[in-house]
Image (tube, rainbow, N blue to C red; front, side):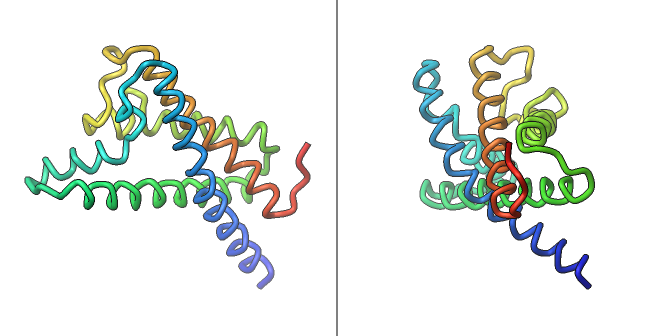
Length: 162
């Protein structure tokens, strides 16, 4: 029974770390978008994804509904990645400075690469037409989120942090 309890505690810590890590990730990418001279909306993938989905379903949500759905998407996505990280840590534990960047690479690959969901849904431009500064923004979002999540997870699970 201790194994199941440990799994539940680990997943709960992963979800909590993911939810918290989603906050500085948004703030950092908003600031970075301004520094890079990108439109503010460029850092907000959630509202664009919700709009693409609404267009596909041929519905017109109000602006406030789009932001509410986008917030739910963002934090649901963050909690899901927290769960993935917790399960990966249970399977193959890694120091946060290793596990965080590995998770960032996975997130980037599954979201922003040519095969990624954001690219495939048209939420993001194809990689070959994407300016370098947008790619940098995507990497920063994935890496800042993943590192924050990894270090928070280590703290929440009392794992040694170097």
